[in-house]
Picture (tube, rainbow, N blue to C red):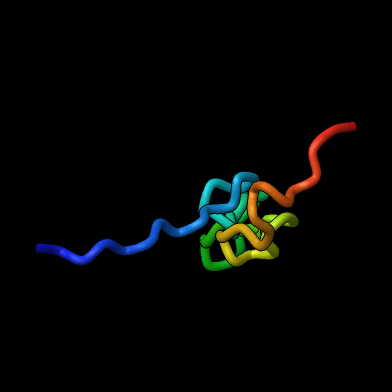
Length: 60
């Protein structure tokens, strides 16, 4: 019988995709596209929640 593994807590803000690269629309001299890296400010690039959902602040 397989062992149960605990579910990983995925960040609700980035849905587990903490770093994305956005193209600027320009290219370099050798033809590659220029990109900017953007990290999730909530999890700071880890992809997992840092605070449990019950302790997260809700409201205004």
